[in-house]
Length: 104
Image (cartoon, rainbow, N blue to C red; front, side, top):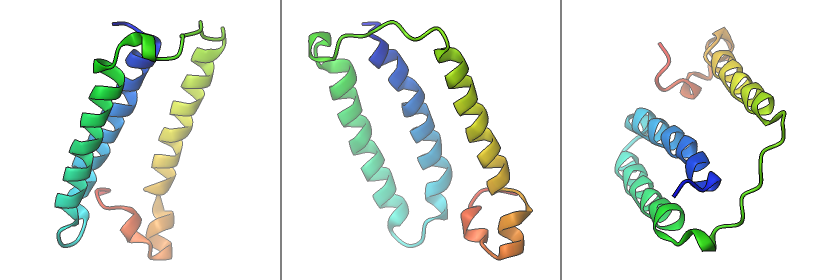
């Protein structure tokens, strides 16, 4: 049950869920419905591939490198920095407001 791939995949699932639910309303026409249907299909595949399939079908987990936490922390900090830069005045000055569907 606690295979590292299973536990680690929850982060991606949460990120995808937030991304789809927050941004789909900004899509034109029927695209919000298409995004939701695609998301539901992807989650159904995720549940089968990660949680319902026997753990023996998953690759053997290896212990993480001692600095793996620092790499993860750096990647999350970089992601947050790019979120900030993406919502900074740059898109407003260049007229690329379509990059900011939910930014105040």
